[in-house]
Each structure stands twice: as structure tokens, then as C-alpha cells.
Amino acid sequence: MSTDAPKRARKTPAERAAEISAAARAIALGEGLHALTLRAVADRVGVTAPLVAHYQPSMDVLVAETFRAIVADELAEVGAHVRAHIGRDRVAGLRILLLTLLDGGRDDVTAVWVDGWSLSRRNPLLAAAVRDQTAAWHTTLASLVLAAAGLGVLSNAEADRVAAQLLAMVDGLNTHAMIGFRPGNANVALIARTLEHEMRLTPGTLAG
Amino acid sequence: MSTDAPKRARKTPAERAAEISAAARAIALGEGLHALTLRAVADRVGVTAPLVAHYQPSMDVLVAETFRAIVADELAEVGAHVRAHIGRDRVAGLRILLLTLLDGGRDDVTAVWVDGWSLSRRNPLLAAAVRDQTAAWHTTLASLVLAAAGLGVLSNAEADRVAAQLLAMVDGLNTHAMIGFRPGNANVALIARTLEHEMRLTPGTLAG
DNA sequence: CGCACTATTGAGTGTATGCTCAATAAAACG
DNA sequence: CGTTTTATTGAGCATACACTCAATAGTGCG
Image: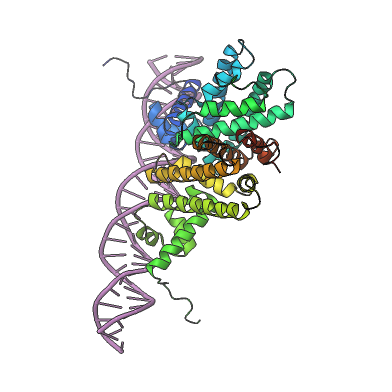
């Protein structure tokens, strides 16, 4: 009976925008980009649908930006995690990266990627975001591969090719894991052997 | 003004069912599994939506069966193509397979796979179809890899692992190609080098 | 030819989507 | 304390979806 619950909670545009972004991320991660609707966001924030619409130019923009935010954060987190362990030896970073990217518990982010690929056909802004973030991952992987291989072992072009292959394998394996297809879940060992060969590393250096 | 255009074209259930299946396949391949709606099918067949509904237990069933039909046919076609060329030398089949799977012009089928992964979350029948077809591809690839490596070179378990990796790479590379991400489109050469190593082939045997 | 069978339709229900807009109420300000 | 500003809502529009069901009209059979 105090003043705690006014009929309308009025906040600053910045606060509301932040709430909406956070809700959108939570929904996308929990139920997929497909479940990201005006009403779903509104319900989660505790406001009405028109308010959410008021804060966004269109739903396509919110979907694209939510995808971008989730994936950019993922890249930043994994990057930070890798950099924290890269000091031991030059291969350690890549090993940590593989373990992080492939050792399960990432189905929610994988689902966001898959929905992004699927929805891109009808949402050009999302398509651009997907391409941008894929390129960003590729760039990060290429520099990591270059460093892990050692000075002068791989050319830039070679590192690019290896990174493209690595990215494709990671996406493919994660997608298969997401749909429940796991024919012997030795994904890390699998990919490690290939990379060791491509990077001229002594067999076993990555797999450990 | 002849009798060519009766107000209602009445056909046998078998004919209609075939028309509906064909229309569903065409729509899924042309516009994606997402575009597969009662109205879309009805318009393409030239009938009304309720008739299409009448021929199917539910839309989820039609989507799942259309996916299954498209992908099963794809596997059969590629398999036939490979078997037609497998006579020359034991590696020829695998080389043909890679060229077929990776050399572009397959974005429509890739899009069907991507939509299948995405829609699986809300369509259990589709999810089962996706898992089944993935397993079928894996089995086919494993036996092809086993044969191409030569007698006794790979164990069954090793061939399974290589096939899983190959399948993931193919799916990942095709998905990336579909969204327009092509950092140097040497996909075949890329994957060939990896396979040559995994299968203990002389470098260059697959890439040609 | 006329009748029975059934493939097909028209009309409609219920739900969900994004989005608009005038009205409302909370906060800020003089 | 009254006025202005504006964040928020209620109501509603247009669209699209799957699905139902009684009515309709081809088609083959007797």
C-alpha cells in the first residue's frame, strides 16, 4: 500500500532501451531469434508491445542488433579467455579456443547462429550482421592460427585458409551437436589432428 | 470456350497428393522451408488451402516429409553420381563427391538444411527427419571414405570420425557460402588436403 | 439418365504478428 | 501548486497463419 507500485513505471529512455536490449538478448539465447517478437520482449520487460515498438525503428533492426550483440560479446569473451592463457606457450591459446568452442554447453549460441542463417533470407540487416560477425570470427581465428603456428611457418594466405576451414568445422560440429547428432563426441581431438597437420605442428601438441 | 476449364478440377487422391508433394518441394527449394505454408502450396497447385490441409494430418508433417524427400533425393542423386565414377580408381568417387558437394550451385539445398536446423526446435517430426538424414549422410560418407582409403588402412571407427569431420566441414563451408562469406573459395582444395592426411593418401591424389 | 460418392470449395474461427495513434499519467519545471 | 513535457498505454488495424465444416459440384456406377 506504499508508493512502491505506481500504475505506470516511467523510466528514462536510456534505461528502457537498456532493459529492452537485455530482454531481447535473454529471449534470443533462451528460445531462439525466432521467438524474438514485440510481445515477448514487452512481457519480459513488463511493459506493453507498442512501447517496445516505440523504441525501435522496426523489429528487423532489433533482431539484427540482438544477434550482433550476442555474437560480438561471445567473440570478446572467448578472445579474453584465450588471451589470458596464451602466455604459457604459443599453442596454448589455440588449444583453449578449441576447448571453449567445442566442449558443449554452447547450444544456445549455436541456435542463435542457425536462426541467424535462416532468417537472413528475409532480413537484410540481419544478413549483414551475420556476414560481419562471421568475418570478425574469421579474422580472429586467422591471427590466432598464425601466432600458434610460430614465426614464419604460415603465410597470411595460408592462415586465412586454415582459419576458414577451422571456422567451418566448428560451425558444422556445433550445429550437429545442437540437433543431437553426436557419432562419438571426440570433436576436439578430431579437429586438433587436422590443425596440427595444417600448421606443421608435432602431432599431439594441440590435442592435449 | 471448350470444355478445357471446368470450374473445379477434380483428380484422384493419389494425383493430388503427388501434386502437393511436388509443389511443397518446389517451394522449399525455391524459397526455403519457412515459406512452406498451406496457402503457398495451394496457390502453386491451383487449389484452395483447405484442400491441402485435407491431404495432410498437419503442416508440421508436410514440412518434415518435404525435408526428408528433398534430402533423401539429394543423397540418392549424389550417391548415383559417385558410383558412376568410382570405377576409375578407388579415390575417384570421393573426389567426385567433394566436387559435387562443394562446388557451388547448391545454395538452395543448403538453405533447406539451415531452415531444417532452425525449425527443428518447434517441430519434433522435422527434428527427427533432420537427425535421420544427417545419420544417413554420415553412413554414406563413412563407407566412401573407408573404400577410398584402401583396404585395411582405416578402421571402421577411424572412418566414422573422418566422415563426421568431413560432414561438418561440408555443412559449415556450404553454410558460409550461402550467406555470402567466401574468403578465397578454395573449398575443395582445402578439404582435400585434410582428407588426404587423415586417410594416409599421397598429397595431391584428392585435390586433382 | 439419374443417383450416390466424394473431391473440392466458401465462409469462417482463433491465434499471432508488426505497427499506428490518440489518450493518459508520471515526472520536470517555473 | 499549476503547467508543460513526454513516457506509456488502450484500442485497434491489417496481415498471415493453421485449421474446421457444412455446402457444392464433378465423376463413375447402376
